[in-house]
Amino acid sequence: MTLLRIGSRGSQLALWQANHIAALLRARGHQVELEIIKTTGDKITDVALAKVGTKGMFTKEIEEALIEDRIDLAVHSLKDLPTELAPEFEIAAITERQNPLDAFLSRRFQCIEELPQGARIGTSSLRRQAQLKALRPDLAVFPLRGNVDTRLRKLDDGEYDAIILASAGLNRLGRTELIRQILTADMMCPAAGQGALGIEIRSRDEKTRREVEFLNDPPTAKAAACERALLNELGGGCQVPIGAFAEVVDGKIQLTGVVARPDGSTVLREVRTGSDPQLLGREVGQQLLRRGGGEILREVYGEPAVTPAQP
Image (cartoon, rainbow, N blue to C red; front, top):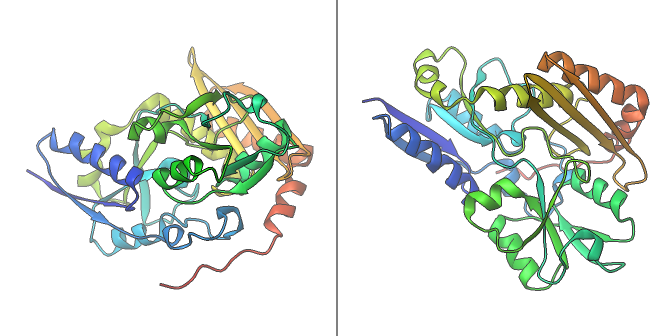
């Protein structure tokens, strides 16, 4: 029996994900321990994530635990993992994807179209904000931080008329009661890797790689590789106005890439089909840059970022 130590953030969703992987490992006869690690992103709770200029804000401290051999593997929401990992780390498996789309939640309104002019809508994501503004420039979009329960409570308390959250997280936690509309990729292109889990290990840790390889879902891994190649080509992290959504259909990959101005005034969208996930992702990224995506992203990156507080 192998002892495997899993590192995870301490949010309700992160713990659900880590315990889900732990259960699958235990079912194969492994002993599993869980270590909760507080990350930079968890420490900054009063600032919109888009204003925090730190790639890997949800992974840095977990990777330090890997390097120090305090854990053997980390379970991440794949969309939180930087597209370029340090040489010391690798993604050993990408799990079967849950619904990758975003969800519209409200107590009073059934869809985005029903919201009255000036309605307050909450989101933690610049990607979502930009696409919301393109759909409904009359809405008032406000930052929304906290775990899923906190965000739902703020909706219940009337701070917002509606909020946008990832469908996958709500499904995993069984908190789907306020979902009124699933937003198609045409309405709101999701984040690269949204809905999938990434299992990160130390590079060259052959033993752990063998133990977790059964968790890898090839169609999801192929789609995610394509999305992450697009994101990497654009030089983006998880908190920039970039959407990437790939689907494997009849052996071919269809990739939708989006770059948008935060105010929604410009939304660049590119859809292409190919067979090589890395090549397709790079090609779509390059085309978006040629069409003006580079200028949009330079404007976003040029905004002053908040320096994370030191622990």
